[in-house]
Image (cartoon, rainbow, N blue to C red; front, side, top):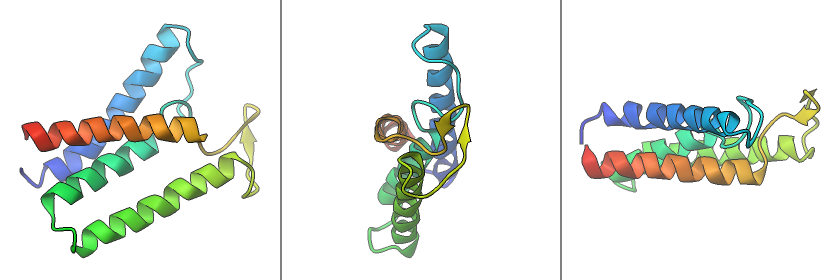
Length: 120
């Protein structure tokens, strides 16, 4: 595996999340919204963590930092969505992501990350 994959996999996860949002909009399953379903932020974080997990030893500081900051970020966007952290609403929707959006974003990130682990 090349070190380029550490950057390419998370960026590919972001693109995949965006394309899924476009397809869901075209199929009239949800209105197009960059903050919607699936969470691109979560996809990027999960793809990066999978790449670091595969590329570096689990005792690596980089892996630990990625897991900690990823967990903190995901908990913040959940807390913002559910109103625990007071946030601004845009288009009558709270900022952040619901747990469903985060779960599907994690699946997208995991699939993209595992694809890069397998085929790079």
